[in-house]
Structures are given as structure tokens and as C-alpha cells.
Image (tube, rainbow, N blue to C red; front, side, top):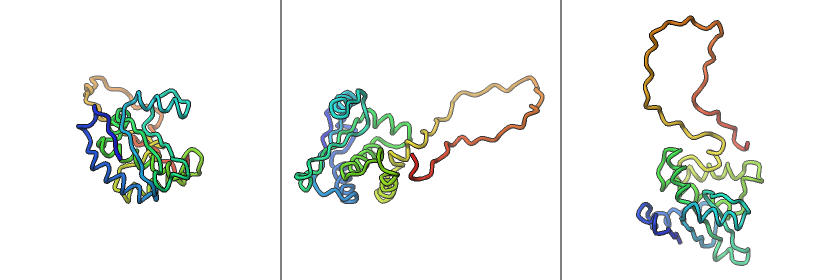
Length: 185
């Protein structure tokens, strides 16, 4: 079940997100039901502080159910729509896609995956599932690159003075961030 806090209800479709949640849950292999709370930064900050001892908001938290309940109820996810909106803007896709990326990431954690302790297995699996579910770049992939910069609107004035070419050769640099090899942190 998807629960969207009232202030965000108009921006997302609970039925569309529920359909995605069920498709992603099956793709990940999570058997039991999953409840998702779509909330705000203060709520995620409080949950993060209470359960992880980190006094800051975060994008997604996963709460696996005890093993004896997992067949019926795999666990819960909490997602900050404020953080998701900032990330969607930074990476140039919709809030809907960002929430779907965070749902996938959270489901992988509910299935026992942990990118903080593995050797890239979760990142590899998340990338494969992202392609299968037709999602933009995964959460883990994004942590290894920087968001694309938005083009500057300001125009430079042409120089009226001529300068001598530098005696040092100019190095050509790419504006794109270097991508790390899969499996690296």
C-alpha cells in the first residue's frame, strides 16, 4: 500500500505507484506485502534519527519485517518527497521516476541487499533491474557521478584586447564526470 501525506497527494498517482511497487517487488523477489510512506524531510529526519541515530533527512529508509512475518509482510519503506523532488530536478527527470527509483532501492534493501557492505553486488543488480523496469540511473550509480550542470544563461562580453597565447599547452578536459567501474565505491 502507498500512503502519500496530504500535502503531496495532487502530484503523484497512488494507483500508478502501487502498480510499479508490485512489478518491482516481483522483479526483486520480495514475497510479502510492502507498505510505502511518502512523506517530507522532517518525518524522514525523525525516522533516521530514531532508527539509525543520524540526525538528518534522507531520501529512503527501509524497515524489514521480522523473518517470521516476511512471507506475509516483507517490510516498510519511507521516502521523503522533498528530497526526491530535489534529486529529480538535479538529475533531470520527473518526481514520479525518482520515487520509483527510491522504491526499487528500498525493495533491494528489504530483500537483504546492502551496498554499504557488499562488493558492488547490489549496484549491479539495481542497474539490471533499472533497465528491466525502464528507469533512469539508479541511486547507487548516481553516487559515483555528479549531477549534470544546468547551462548558464549569462553571456560573456567579447574581449577587446588581444593577449599572447600562453607558452604552456592547454589541456583538454571533459565536462562530463569520470564514471567509476562497476563494483567500485
